[in-house]
Image (cartoon, rainbow, N blue to C red; front, side, top):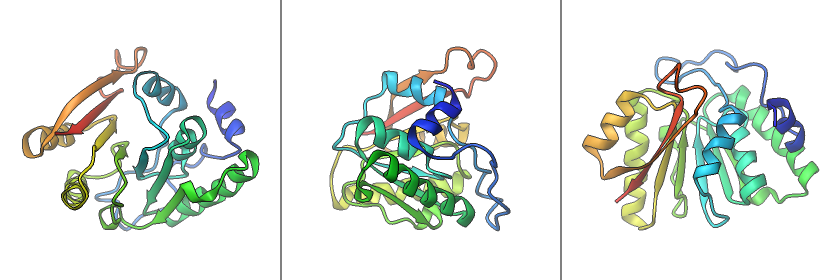
Length: 203
C-alpha cells in the first residue's frame, strides 16, 4: 500500500509538516519524520508484536507507528512526544482513528513530555526509536528502562530504525542489551547503510 492509502485506512493524517514548529530542545531532539509505511511493512514481516505487548514509541510525532501497531496487532501503544504541536496532531488522529475503527481509547495513549522524563510503566516491554534524539537523551531513557526492569522483571526489547553509531556503541558496550535481529530495507540499504532496523533484547 502507498503512504496515503495507510493514512486513509487508519483515518489519520501523519504526512505533511515534518518539523512541527521550533523546539527549545532542538540541540538534543531531532526534527520529526514518520517511519515510512513501506519500512513498517518490512519490519513486521520479520518482527512479531503480540497483542499482550505494550509498545512505547519515543518521539512518536503524529502517532503513525502507534496506530499501525494497534490496528494490525491489537497491542497497547503509548506515544511520547515533546513537541506540543505534534502531540495535538496525535490526539486529533486518535479521535479520528477511534471513530473509524470503533476501538477503545484505553489501549492507545499519548503523552506530551520530554522522553527522558516519561515514567516507564511496569508492563511496558517494547520500545521504539527512530533516531529521535541525541545519545545523551537516549542513555537516560535506556537507564530509565533498566531501572523499571529492576523493579518489575520482564522481557524487554528495543527496536531502532535508522540506528546511529552512538546508540549501537552504547547498547553493545555499556548495557546488558544484545543484538537479536537485523532487518534491512532491501532497496534502500544499497544507497544508505542506515536503512535498517536493529532489535536489541535485554539479557
